[in-house]
Length: 310
Image (spheres, one colour):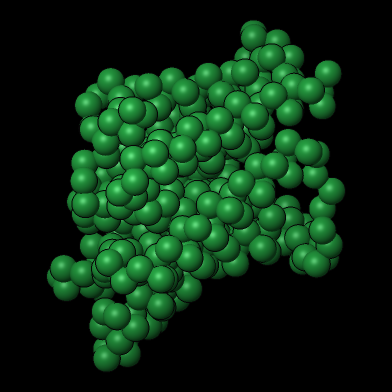
């Protein structure tokens, strides 16, 4: 009866998901990597990353509720998001990437509010600003500006001036950022951005060599992606304006993952789409089997990390 614990929104259930996320990271960092518990710099960085993931979970849950992406009250989306995070525990070491992903999730929420038809220019500007700020943390996040132009095909495409809003946002951030750097007499980190992007492009078609644990995690992610997308496109009952926006972010996130080899950007869309699939499974035994398999994946990956590090 595992599904009954996921199909409620009691605070204790949300706390259990957070504890599972924290335990997964703790096991990887302190048991597998054998990091000293009192390492101050790491503790601060990891705590900030956990806080950013916490806000990501809260926002993801609210996006699900506000837009009625799932038809029943459940925590499937945040549970699946947490599972994906634990499958790739090294994300806790990349605070900037986690922060960029949070900004992209906020941008997803802002695009979803376009369906009201109100204040479209303001919402497009907000979305563009969020994405550009995310690109300051991770340059490839700038690709998500494609979502703004894609959204215009559904909202306000007839007003040509809307198409220039992302460029206006880019100009605003450039001028504001340049002014701040001039006042603080700080150099713009252009070299680091250029190095990261050029290295990613240089290794674009090269298949990296991953350890067995990461390979299992990637295979699991691909399977979740294929099931989510396959079921979505072959079942018209899943189609709604909100779900179309989520799929739109998923495809752009997949492009970013291909360019940067960072898969975190597709976690939220996959979690939402897979939650749509799970809640509609009518066969009790099938739903329970899928949930138990998903819950066993983080433990399996962490065990493989432990074996390979030993």
